[in-house]
Image (cartoon, rainbow, N blue to C red):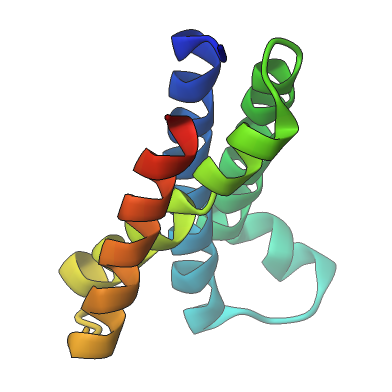
Amino acid sequence: MISLFSILLVVSSSIIGALGGFFFKKSSRNLKFNIYSLIKNHNLILGLVLFGSASIIYIIALTDGKLNVLYPISSLTYVWSSLLARKYLGEKLNIYKWSGISLIILGAILIVQ
């Protein structure tokens, strides 16, 4: 049996990773490819910190859990990313995207059983 703590760490990692992707998207609006602009791009820096944090949390979860259970749960990142994009970036979700989100959630629930 996999520990609930490991599952919660992976879910947390997926939320933090989705936030990292969200800030990467926000940073791309005024992205310039010179070192000074990259350092001043606060959304880019925040995205990097969040992605790095999510990776560290995920690695910690793997120390006590099974990869074949925890890795599929990390697909919840797509759910959080879609919801963030819809709410804060105004992106539309059609019936196919909502169906995909539902299947990801169902798959994550089934894989934990």
